[in-house]
Amino acid sequence: MTRPLQGIRVLDLTNVLAGPFACHQLAHMGADVIKVETRNGGDLARQLGADAELNKRFMGVSFLAQNPGKRSITIDLKHPTGKEVFRKLVRTADVVIENFRPGVMKRLGLGYEELLQENPSLIYCAISGFGQDGPLRDLPAYDQIIQGMSGVMSITGAPENAPYRVGYPMADTIGGITAAFAVAAALAERNREGGVFIDVSMLEAVMATMGWAVSNHLIADREPKPMGNENVTASPSGTFRTGDGLLNIAANKQEQFEAVCRVIGRPELIEDERFIERQSRLQHRFELKAALEEAMAAKSTDEWWKLFNQAGVPAGPVYSVPQALDHPQVADRGMVGTFENAPGVGRDIRLVRTGFKVNGQAPRVETPPPTLGQHSEEILERLGYSATEIEELRVEKAI
Image (cartoon, rainbow, N blue to C red):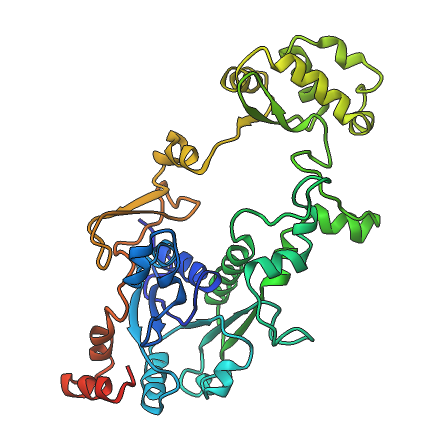
Protein backbone atom coordinates (compact mmCIF):
# COMPACT_ATOMS: atom_id res chain seq x y z
CA MET A 1 0.00 0.00 0.00
CA THR A 2 1.35 3.41 -1.00
CA ARG A 3 1.41 5.78 1.97
CA PRO A 4 2.51 9.12 0.50
CA LEU A 5 2.30 11.00 3.82
CA GLN A 6 4.34 8.49 5.80
CA GLY A 7 6.79 10.37 8.01
CA ILE A 8 4.54 13.47 8.17
CA ARG A 9 3.31 14.39 11.65
CA VAL A 10 0.01 16.21 12.03
CA LEU A 11 -1.22 17.70 15.30
CA ASP A 12 -5.01 17.52 15.30
CA LEU A 13 -6.49 20.08 17.70
CA THR A 14 -9.92 19.86 16.13
CA ASN A 15 -13.38 18.96 17.36
CA VAL A 16 -16.55 17.30 16.08
CA LEU A 17 -16.39 16.95 12.27
CA ALA A 18 -14.78 19.44 9.85
CA GLY A 19 -11.29 19.28 11.38
CA PRO A 20 -11.41 15.62 12.41
CA PHE A 21 -12.55 14.71 8.89
CA ALA A 22 -9.59 16.61 7.40
CA CYS A 23 -7.16 14.74 9.64
CA HIS A 24 -9.03 11.48 8.94
CA GLN A 25 -8.07 11.84 5.26
CA LEU A 26 -4.43 12.58 6.10
CA ALA A 27 -4.21 9.60 8.47
CA HIS A 28 -5.43 7.27 5.72
CA MET A 29 -2.64 8.53 3.49
CA GLY A 30 -0.03 7.57 6.06
CA ALA A 31 0.36 10.67 8.24
CA ASP A 32 1.10 10.26 11.96
CA VAL A 33 -1.90 12.13 13.34
CA ILE A 34 -1.74 13.03 17.03
CA LYS A 35 -5.05 14.18 18.41
CA VAL A 36 -4.43 16.83 21.08
CA GLU A 37 -7.49 16.84 23.35
CA THR A 38 -8.67 18.53 26.51
CA ARG A 39 -8.26 16.63 29.75
CA ASN A 40 -11.97 16.65 30.62
CA GLY A 41 -13.94 14.96 27.87
CA GLY A 42 -11.73 15.58 24.85
CA ASP A 43 -13.31 16.02 21.43
CA LEU A 44 -17.03 16.82 21.87
CA ALA A 45 -17.79 14.15 19.27
CA ARG A 46 -16.82 11.56 21.90
CA GLN A 47 -20.21 12.32 23.46
CA LEU A 48 -22.23 12.35 20.24
CA GLY A 49 -23.89 9.55 18.30
CA ALA A 50 -26.76 7.10 18.21
CA ASP A 51 -25.35 4.77 20.93
CA ALA A 52 -25.96 6.41 24.32
CA GLU A 53 -23.74 3.92 26.17
CA LEU A 54 -20.76 4.73 23.95
CA ASN A 55 -21.38 8.44 24.52
CA LYS A 56 -21.03 7.86 28.26
CA ARG A 57 -17.68 6.14 27.65
CA PHE A 58 -16.46 9.10 25.55
CA MET A 59 -16.38 6.84 22.50
CA GLY A 60 -19.43 8.16 20.65
CA VAL A 61 -20.16 6.91 17.17
CA SER A 62 -19.58 10.42 15.78
CA PHE A 63 -16.03 10.29 17.17
CA LEU A 64 -15.37 6.74 16.00
CA ALA A 65 -16.28 7.61 12.42
CA GLN A 66 -13.58 10.27 11.93
CA ASN A 67 -10.71 9.23 14.16
CA PRO A 68 -9.30 5.78 13.33
CA GLY A 69 -5.54 5.63 12.91
CA LYS A 70 -4.91 8.59 15.21
CA ARG A 71 -3.15 8.75 18.57
CA SER A 72 -4.57 10.73 21.49
CA ILE A 73 -2.80 12.88 24.05
CA THR A 74 -4.53 15.11 26.58
CA ILE A 75 -2.99 18.55 27.22
CA ASP A 76 -4.42 21.57 29.02
CA LEU A 77 -3.48 24.37 26.61
CA LYS A 78 -4.47 26.97 29.21
CA HIS A 79 -1.94 25.62 31.74
CA PRO A 80 1.57 27.16 31.46
CA THR A 81 3.23 23.75 31.69
CA GLY A 82 0.71 22.28 29.27
CA LYS A 83 1.60 25.00 26.78
CA GLU A 84 5.27 24.08 27.06
CA VAL A 85 4.45 20.43 26.41
CA PHE A 86 2.51 21.47 23.31
CA ARG A 87 5.35 23.67 22.08
CA LYS A 88 7.74 20.72 22.34
CA LEU A 89 5.29 18.64 20.37
CA VAL A 90 5.08 21.35 17.69
CA ARG A 91 8.85 21.16 17.24
CA THR A 92 8.41 17.57 16.05
CA ALA A 93 5.42 18.27 13.77
CA ASP A 94 4.91 19.21 10.14
CA VAL A 95 1.31 20.37 10.38
CA VAL A 96 -1.04 21.85 12.99
CA ILE A 97 -4.77 21.83 12.24
CA GLU A 98 -7.31 23.58 14.47
CA ASN A 99 -10.95 24.64 14.16
CA PHE A 100 -11.35 27.08 17.03
CA ARG A 101 -12.92 30.46 16.47
CA PRO A 102 -10.45 32.93 14.95
CA GLY A 103 -8.12 34.39 17.58
CA VAL A 104 -8.49 31.65 20.20
CA MET A 105 -5.05 30.13 19.62
CA LYS A 106 -3.42 33.57 19.54
CA ARG A 107 -5.00 34.45 22.89
CA LEU A 108 -3.53 31.24 24.28
CA GLY A 109 -0.11 32.35 23.06
CA LEU A 110 -0.10 29.47 20.59
CA GLY A 111 -1.06 31.19 17.35
CA TYR A 112 0.67 30.79 14.00
CA GLU A 113 3.35 33.45 14.59
CA GLU A 114 4.14 32.08 18.05
CA LEU A 115 4.39 28.49 16.81
CA LEU A 116 6.65 29.52 13.93
CA GLN A 117 9.22 30.41 16.57
CA GLU A 118 9.16 26.76 17.62
CA ASN A 119 9.02 25.37 14.09
CA PRO A 120 9.90 27.79 11.26
CA SER A 121 8.60 25.47 8.51
CA LEU A 122 5.26 24.69 10.15
CA ILE A 123 2.11 24.33 8.06
CA TYR A 124 -0.73 25.79 10.13
CA CYS A 125 -4.31 25.18 8.98
CA ALA A 126 -7.16 27.07 10.65
CA ILE A 127 -10.70 25.90 9.82
CA SER A 128 -13.56 28.20 10.77
CA GLY A 129 -17.10 28.94 9.70
CA PHE A 130 -16.41 32.20 7.90
CA GLY A 131 -12.63 32.59 7.69
CA GLN A 132 -10.02 34.50 9.66
CA ASP A 133 -11.20 37.95 8.58
CA GLY A 134 -14.40 39.68 7.47
CA PRO A 135 -17.43 40.94 9.43
CA LEU A 136 -18.58 37.45 10.48
CA ARG A 137 -15.19 36.04 11.53
CA ASP A 138 -16.02 35.90 15.25
CA LEU A 139 -19.42 34.23 14.94
CA PRO A 140 -19.87 30.55 15.79
CA ALA A 141 -20.84 28.37 12.86
CA TYR A 142 -22.17 24.86 12.63
CA ASP A 143 -23.05 22.81 9.59
CA GLN A 144 -26.68 23.88 9.38
CA ILE A 145 -25.76 27.56 9.76
CA ILE A 146 -23.37 27.27 6.81
CA GLN A 147 -25.89 25.32 4.73
CA GLY A 148 -28.38 28.13 5.24
CA MET A 149 -26.00 31.04 4.64
CA SER A 150 -24.29 29.50 1.59
CA GLY A 151 -27.55 29.18 -0.34
CA VAL A 152 -27.48 25.38 -0.28
CA MET A 153 -30.74 25.12 1.65
CA SER A 154 -32.47 27.55 -0.72
CA ILE A 155 -32.00 25.13 -3.64
CA THR A 156 -32.57 21.89 -1.72
CA GLY A 157 -36.06 20.39 -1.68
CA ALA A 158 -38.99 20.98 -3.99
CA PRO A 159 -40.65 24.36 -4.66
CA GLU A 160 -43.44 23.51 -2.23
CA ASN A 161 -41.21 22.53 0.71
CA ALA A 162 -37.81 24.24 0.30
CA PRO A 163 -35.59 25.34 1.91
CA TYR A 164 -34.34 21.98 3.14
CA ARG A 165 -31.14 20.97 4.88
CA VAL A 166 -29.03 18.35 3.13
CA GLY A 167 -29.45 15.13 5.11
CA TYR A 168 -25.86 14.85 6.39
CA PRO A 169 -23.35 17.50 7.56
CA MET A 170 -22.13 18.34 4.08
CA ALA A 171 -20.71 21.75 5.03
CA ASP A 172 -18.52 20.22 7.73
CA THR A 173 -17.39 17.46 5.40
CA ILE A 174 -16.62 19.80 2.48
CA GLY A 175 -14.74 22.11 4.84
CA GLY A 176 -12.71 19.16 6.08
CA ILE A 177 -11.83 17.75 2.70
CA THR A 178 -10.92 21.27 1.48
CA ALA A 179 -8.53 21.59 4.41
CA ALA A 180 -6.99 18.19 3.72
CA PHE A 181 -6.44 19.14 0.07
CA ALA A 182 -4.85 22.46 1.02
CA VAL A 183 -2.53 20.81 3.56
CA ALA A 184 -1.51 18.11 1.09
CA ALA A 185 -0.77 20.80 -1.51
CA ALA A 186 1.40 22.73 0.97
CA LEU A 187 3.29 19.55 1.85
CA ALA A 188 3.92 18.91 -1.84
CA GLU A 189 5.42 22.35 -2.50
CA ARG A 190 9.02 21.87 -3.54
CA ASN A 191 11.77 24.11 -2.21
CA ARG A 192 9.44 25.73 0.27
CA GLU A 193 11.07 28.05 2.77
CA GLY A 194 9.25 29.18 5.90
CA GLY A 195 5.83 28.36 7.22
CA VAL A 196 2.41 28.29 5.56
CA PHE A 197 -0.84 29.63 7.01
CA ILE A 198 -3.97 28.05 5.53
CA ASP A 199 -7.28 29.80 6.19
CA VAL A 200 -10.25 27.53 5.41
CA SER A 201 -13.68 29.13 5.42
CA MET A 202 -16.43 26.51 5.53
CA LEU A 203 -18.81 29.03 3.91
CA GLU A 204 -16.47 29.63 0.97
CA ALA A 205 -15.51 25.95 0.69
CA VAL A 206 -19.18 25.00 0.29
CA MET A 207 -19.88 27.77 -2.22
CA ALA A 208 -16.86 26.65 -4.25
CA THR A 209 -18.60 23.29 -4.77
CA MET A 210 -21.96 24.72 -5.87
CA GLY A 211 -20.96 24.94 -9.54
CA TRP A 212 -23.89 25.73 -11.81
CA ALA A 213 -25.97 27.21 -8.97
CA VAL A 214 -23.46 29.99 -8.44
CA SER A 215 -22.40 30.33 -12.08
CA ASN A 216 -25.98 30.66 -13.35
CA HIS A 217 -26.34 33.69 -11.12
CA LEU A 218 -22.90 35.21 -11.76
CA ILE A 219 -22.87 34.71 -15.52
CA ALA A 220 -26.49 34.36 -16.66
CA ASP A 221 -28.08 36.49 -13.92
CA ARG A 222 -30.49 33.65 -13.17
CA GLU A 223 -31.27 32.96 -9.54
CA PRO A 224 -31.27 29.19 -8.85
CA LYS A 225 -34.49 27.73 -7.48
CA PRO A 226 -35.30 24.50 -5.65
CA MET A 227 -36.31 21.80 -8.11
CA GLY A 228 -36.69 18.73 -5.93
CA ASN A 229 -35.40 15.70 -7.80
CA GLU A 230 -35.50 17.38 -11.20
CA ASN A 231 -32.32 18.30 -13.10
CA VAL A 232 -32.19 21.98 -14.01
CA THR A 233 -30.16 21.39 -17.19
CA ALA A 234 -31.86 18.39 -18.81
CA SER A 235 -35.07 16.42 -19.22
CA PRO A 236 -35.85 13.60 -18.73
CA SER A 237 -33.38 13.73 -15.86
CA GLY A 238 -34.46 13.15 -12.28
CA THR A 239 -36.37 10.64 -10.19
CA PHE A 240 -39.16 8.62 -11.77
CA ARG A 241 -41.77 6.33 -10.25
CA THR A 242 -41.78 2.72 -11.44
CA GLY A 243 -44.09 -0.18 -10.75
CA ASP A 244 -42.58 -0.76 -7.30
CA GLY A 245 -40.45 2.24 -6.35
CA LEU A 246 -38.18 4.95 -7.69
CA LEU A 247 -35.51 5.12 -10.37
CA ASN A 248 -33.09 7.94 -11.12
CA ILE A 249 -32.55 8.62 -14.83
CA ALA A 250 -30.00 11.06 -16.26
CA ALA A 251 -30.83 11.32 -19.97
CA ASN A 252 -28.78 14.44 -20.59
CA LYS A 253 -28.08 13.89 -24.30
CA GLN A 254 -30.48 13.79 -27.26
CA GLU A 255 -29.60 10.18 -28.04
CA GLN A 256 -30.24 9.21 -24.43
CA PHE A 257 -33.69 10.81 -24.49
CA GLU A 258 -34.49 8.91 -27.66
CA ALA A 259 -33.24 5.68 -26.10
CA VAL A 260 -35.53 6.21 -23.10
CA CYS A 261 -38.53 6.57 -25.37
CA ARG A 262 -37.70 3.38 -27.23
CA VAL A 263 -36.99 1.37 -24.03
CA ILE A 264 -40.37 2.24 -22.50
CA GLY A 265 -42.17 1.48 -25.77
CA ARG A 266 -43.15 5.08 -26.56
CA PRO A 267 -41.04 5.96 -29.66
CA GLU A 268 -43.66 8.49 -30.80
CA LEU A 269 -42.51 10.82 -27.98
CA ILE A 270 -39.28 11.40 -29.92
CA GLU A 271 -41.17 13.31 -32.62
CA ASP A 272 -43.62 15.03 -30.28
CA GLU A 273 -43.15 18.79 -30.80
CA ARG A 274 -43.19 19.32 -27.03
CA PHE A 275 -40.15 17.09 -26.57
CA ILE A 276 -38.28 17.09 -29.87
CA GLU A 277 -35.61 19.57 -28.77
CA ARG A 278 -33.70 19.97 -25.51
CA GLN A 279 -35.16 23.38 -24.64
CA SER A 280 -38.73 22.33 -25.38
CA ARG A 281 -38.29 19.28 -23.14
CA LEU A 282 -37.24 21.56 -20.31
CA GLN A 283 -40.36 23.69 -20.86
CA HIS A 284 -42.59 20.61 -20.86
CA ARG A 285 -40.63 18.46 -18.41
CA PHE A 286 -43.61 17.52 -16.26
CA GLU A 287 -45.73 16.44 -19.22
CA LEU A 288 -42.83 14.27 -20.36
CA LYS A 289 -42.40 12.90 -16.86
CA ALA A 290 -46.07 11.94 -16.66
CA ALA A 291 -45.84 10.05 -19.95
CA LEU A 292 -42.70 8.19 -18.85
CA GLU A 293 -44.08 7.24 -15.45
CA GLU A 294 -47.30 5.96 -17.02
CA ALA A 295 -45.25 3.54 -19.12
CA MET A 296 -42.78 2.71 -16.35
CA ALA A 297 -45.57 1.52 -14.04
CA ALA A 298 -45.52 -1.74 -16.00
CA LYS A 299 -42.17 -2.94 -14.61
CA SER A 300 -40.12 -2.84 -11.41
CA THR A 301 -37.21 -0.53 -10.64
CA ASP A 302 -34.69 -3.35 -11.08
CA GLU A 303 -36.14 -4.32 -14.46
CA TRP A 304 -36.08 -0.75 -15.81
CA TRP A 305 -32.61 -0.15 -14.37
CA LYS A 306 -31.15 -3.01 -16.42
CA LEU A 307 -33.02 -2.05 -19.58
CA PHE A 308 -31.97 1.59 -19.47
CA ASN A 309 -28.32 0.83 -18.80
CA GLN A 310 -28.26 -1.72 -21.60
CA ALA A 311 -29.51 1.06 -23.88
CA GLY A 312 -26.75 3.42 -22.75
CA VAL A 313 -28.95 5.55 -20.49
CA PRO A 314 -27.48 6.34 -17.04
CA ALA A 315 -29.93 5.11 -14.40
CA GLY A 316 -29.91 3.77 -10.88
CA PRO A 317 -32.20 2.92 -7.96
CA VAL A 318 -32.73 5.10 -4.90
CA TYR A 319 -31.14 3.20 -2.01
CA SER A 320 -31.23 3.59 1.73
CA VAL A 321 -27.87 3.90 3.52
CA PRO A 322 -27.90 0.21 4.59
CA GLN A 323 -28.73 -0.88 1.04
CA ALA A 324 -25.87 1.20 -0.35
CA LEU A 325 -23.38 -0.21 2.15
CA ASP A 326 -24.46 -3.78 1.46
CA HIS A 327 -24.24 -3.50 -2.30
CA PRO A 328 -21.28 -5.47 -3.75
CA GLN A 329 -20.07 -2.37 -5.57
CA VAL A 330 -19.31 -0.82 -2.17
CA ALA A 331 -18.85 -3.87 0.02
CA ASP A 332 -16.32 -5.59 -2.27
CA ARG A 333 -14.03 -2.59 -2.92
CA GLY A 334 -12.62 -2.17 0.58
CA MET A 335 -14.66 0.94 1.41
CA VAL A 336 -15.64 -0.42 4.83
CA GLY A 337 -13.00 -1.47 7.35
CA THR A 338 -13.43 -3.52 10.53
CA PHE A 339 -11.63 -3.06 13.83
CA GLU A 340 -11.97 -6.03 16.14
CA ASN A 341 -12.75 -5.47 19.81
CA ALA A 342 -12.00 -1.75 19.58
CA PRO A 343 -10.63 -0.24 22.84
CA GLY A 344 -13.24 1.65 24.81
CA VAL A 345 -15.99 0.12 22.69
CA GLY A 346 -15.75 -3.51 23.68
CA ARG A 347 -16.90 -4.91 20.35
CA ASP A 348 -16.03 -4.94 16.67
CA ILE A 349 -16.76 -1.72 14.78
CA ARG A 350 -17.12 -1.10 11.05
CA LEU A 351 -16.12 2.28 9.60
CA VAL A 352 -15.90 3.76 6.12
CA ARG A 353 -12.49 4.62 4.70
CA THR A 354 -11.74 7.02 1.83
CA GLY A 355 -13.49 7.17 -1.53
CA PHE A 356 -10.54 6.20 -3.73
CA LYS A 357 -7.90 3.56 -4.34
CA VAL A 358 -4.15 3.93 -4.82
CA ASN A 359 -2.50 1.29 -7.02
CA GLY A 360 -5.59 -0.85 -6.67
CA GLN A 361 -5.84 -0.66 -2.89
CA ALA A 362 -8.14 1.38 -0.65
CA PRO A 363 -6.08 3.49 1.77
CA ARG A 364 -6.48 2.23 5.31
CA VAL A 365 -5.25 2.80 8.82
CA GLU A 366 -4.15 -0.04 11.05
CA THR A 367 -5.39 1.15 14.45
CA PRO A 368 -8.90 1.87 15.76
CA PRO A 369 -10.01 5.25 17.14
CA PRO A 370 -8.11 6.03 20.36
CA THR A 371 -9.54 6.26 23.83
CA LEU A 372 -9.09 9.66 25.46
CA GLY A 373 -5.40 10.20 26.23
CA GLN A 374 -4.56 6.63 25.25
CA HIS A 375 -1.13 7.57 23.91
CA SER A 376 -0.17 10.39 26.26
CA GLU A 377 2.61 8.51 28.02
CA GLU A 378 4.01 7.05 24.80
CA ILE A 379 4.14 10.45 23.08
CA LEU A 380 5.63 12.23 26.09
CA GLU A 381 8.34 9.60 26.46
CA ARG A 382 9.32 10.19 22.80
CA LEU A 383 9.56 13.91 23.61
CA GLY A 384 12.10 13.09 26.32
CA TYR A 385 9.96 13.20 29.44
CA SER A 386 10.84 10.69 32.16
CA ALA A 387 8.25 8.64 34.01
CA THR A 388 8.67 10.94 37.03
CA GLU A 389 8.18 14.06 34.91
CA ILE A 390 5.09 12.60 33.29
CA GLU A 391 3.60 11.88 36.70
CA GLU A 392 4.38 15.45 37.77
CA LEU A 393 2.54 16.75 34.69
CA ARG A 394 -0.47 14.68 35.70
CA VAL A 395 -0.37 15.96 39.26
CA GLU A 396 -0.16 19.54 37.95
CA LYS A 397 -3.13 18.76 35.68
CA ALA A 398 -1.11 20.01 32.71
CA ILE A 399 -1.96 16.75 30.92
